Image (cartoon, rainbow, N blue to C red; front, side, top):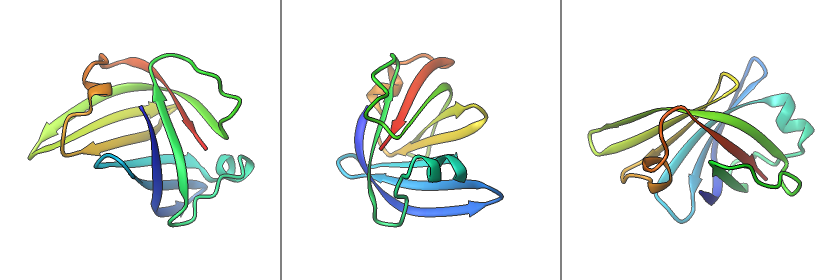
Length: 120
């Protein structure tokens, strides 16, 4: 999955930034926890309304063009009330994808699969 996203909200507390992102093409909301220091060192613009590119893949890819690149584990999927939520742990930090329709990229992948996440 590679998607252009817009920063909808940012909460910063105790050195942790919680980004709420919205996909421009699909109806997907993404909630991503990242250390504020990492965001600052990567010089990533996370101001509200900023446009970013998010990539999540089950195989490694070239990290050179990305500002942030990490490994995570897809550990849980929840479905209920017409919502589909997918959870990825990135070294204990959480990335959560919420959609009103199933996301094929995550429906095809088994839980506990290693995923690669990148942001720029």
